[in-house]
Amino acid sequence: MVNQLTEKARKKTRKVIRPKPEPEFNEAEEKILQAATIHLIRKVGGLFVATGLREEHGKGVQRWIITVTMRYATGHEGYVGDLLYDGKVFRMLTEDSVIDERVRQIAADPEGIRLWNELRTATLRAGKR
Image (cartoon, rainbow, N blue to C red; front, side, top):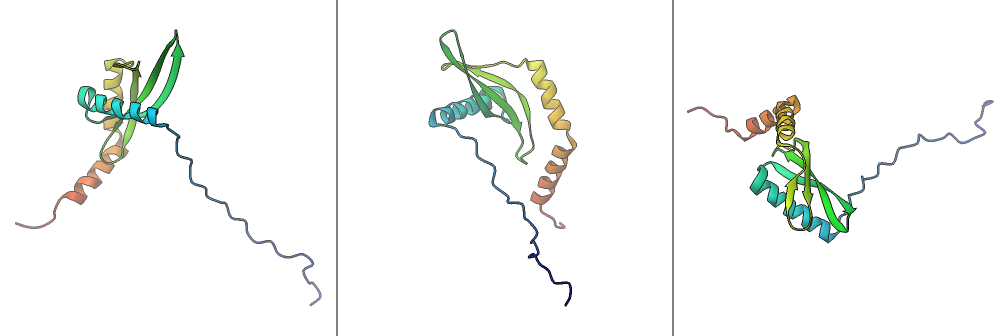
């Protein structure tokens, strides 16, 4: 054995997979998101949910801008607009025409249609009558 290794062979390095950090919400923010989702479902559209929250300060008034997402039961979703909350009243910031166009685009997305067809096929009973 003339050619002996003088150094130890290196093992292959493996990439460590770390879970993505969960967004941190405090209890007050969570309550605002819940109230916004309830408002959206009852007043705007049954598939609209509040998915994000950012605080805005100005003119001595505290307000929140809430991200509105349309989410199907299959998990397919898309951004539709923003909602303003001043601590008392919710108001849509995005115009209705813009929301309608975004909803049309989300509904026409081939991936969403594929997911819906898979879900529908899986829930239908197969059999002969």
